[in-house]
Length: 159
Image 1 (cartoon, helix red, strand yellow):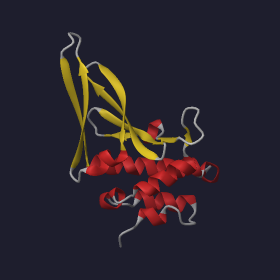
Image 2: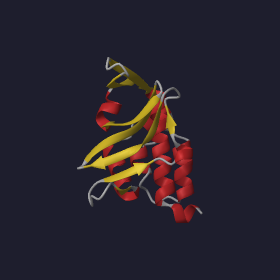
Image 3: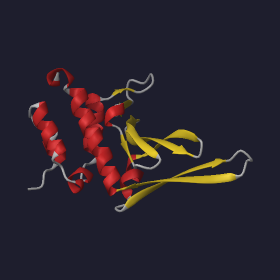
């Protein structure tokens, strides 16, 4: 039977039961999460972003962080002025950067997401660096975000 994480996540289950549900989700079930669910997760368990009372962020802890197993890591989700943004850490050549892209852009393509960083090399020649997230990578990122939500919100009950 297919589990709808958009409904199951906010039901009155014990936190350990929620963790079991998240661990048993398939890739298709993880990718079926809606932006409204993620917005609610960030509002409930996210920390304040900068000095704003409205903006929040839900960062994935270091030991639950996942990525595309190549050159980038999924750091978390930001809710800024009511819009969701994915926070990614990207490594290229001998430098690295953090990139914040729209959640709808990150989840738009069905097969894979291709991100681009346009910069210059040391001789001021324009260079483009790419990073890819296929469905498996995005599903692992969503799973790590769901786990972080449960561990953050129910910290006292899980210890």
